[in-house]
Amino acid sequence: MTVIDISASVMQFLLAFVVVAPLLGAVAALLPAPPGLKGKNPDQAVLRHGVTVTGAVLIATIVLAVGFDHDHPATMQATTDISWIPALDVRIHLGIDGISLPLLLLTALLTFLCALYSYFKLPAGPSPKAFVALVLVLESGTLATFAVLDLLLFFLAFEMVLIPMYFLIARWGGGQRQAAAWKFILYTLLGSVVMLLGILLIGLKSGTFDMVALATDNGRGLTTSVQVIAVLAIGIGLAVKTPMWPLHSWLPDAHTAAPTVGSVLLAGVLLKMGTYGFVRILLPIAPDGMRTFAPYLAAFAVVGIVYGSLACLALARTGAKGDLKRLIAYSSVGHMGFVLLGIATMTPTGVNGALFANIAHGLITGLLFFLVGAVKDRYGTADLDTLAGATGAALYGRAPRLGALLAFAAIASLGLPGLAGFWGEMLTLFGAYSPAEGLSRPAFRTFMAIGAFGTLLTAAYMLIVVRRVCMGEHTPHSRLSPDDRAPRAADGSEPSGAAGARPTATTPQLADIQTYEAAAWTPLAALTVLAGLWPAVLLGLTDPAVQKLLAGGKS
Image (cartoon, rainbow, N blue to C red):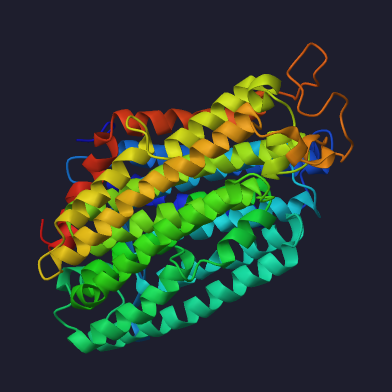
């Protein structure tokens, strides 16, 4: 069933447009604006250009989704297959199925919302032209990662996003941005070098880099030892990007230093490239190798779930001087641990849960980073002790709509039933209860129990954050210094009003949600509710594709 019948050639064009248009837009952003389109100034013109290009890509992606045949989501659609390097049998092979389509939509949506937000709230830094161009290159690389069906093209697209994200952190970030950017690029580049060796091993041993042909072969053309080596090499590169404990240490620094839109794109889109690689490449192409490493992947995943939650609890406690952006970054380590656990089960239930959790994390954590950025802009800091000690009413009393939306995002993140975060975690745990044949049930049920304990820890730190940031500090004021209790404006000055006082008519108010902020955040909140109440929208796409993938290309 298709909502609108669109010809195959138009679908091919739309997918190629979605991948290439941001790249062309990035080049155009660096050129002088035509006289009639400059607006009030060149900076405004280039920011409007970014909104226009990302908006056009989002519309094209939605039309692609509308024309997608939902009765056959396991079939590759809108395919383009052109020979590129005949000597290596490398092809420009594009296509989408029920696994990649939701990720394309998520990427296009988040990038458009970031461009819209930046039009009104550009982060401090160098030329807006460079900022817009980097965001568009980042979008093109991410969309290409989810659309290409050739291993070498996948690697090129995978690497394409590293440089723009490096510069977004290094040039438009906050404190310690240079160190965080270098840590990000070194970790990911080293992981990518190892990943390239694994990709070349698969291509040379099988005689093709075509991901569809390799998935259909289902590892039959590769010996078990080759599969094990390939999974180890490619898995390290993907695990760094995911990020899997203990290869995660670049993530908190990168998120803390990155500008708001950088954090949104990093959490909402870039982390998904790693888990998508596990599902698209390793599960169907090297199933024997994955079966060998699945228990270890699951073990690392559940350690990451608990570790991320404990790190968040440590940051959230009173007097810890925890940074709210850093806390949300560590929460991503835990949430992506659930995704990896689902993949490690090698079952349709677990992998569907992983893909659902992927999308839910992108929506919820993207919204959280938007909100934390707004709180930091208003207070001049993301320090939890300062935010909690600022006033007895905190955000509920000073910016009630902002406080309510932050509480909503936090509750969604902890996996409340009825919101998007619930289904991915539940399906992942169900998958771990009955893993694929050949995997140890006692081991995976132990992992399931540890993961379930992690959900309790997640609820604990998120509720502490809501209580402290939205409701205010409940400890004696003497435990906090005057500097901790007094909020600071964006320019660093201290507002009037007694620290820790109850809200009164004279209590300084913060700007509540602005119109442009509501425009950028409302779609994420609405989709979080929609996915929570109607999970079949997403699972109806992913399940047939996952069944075919795990069955070796047979529907």
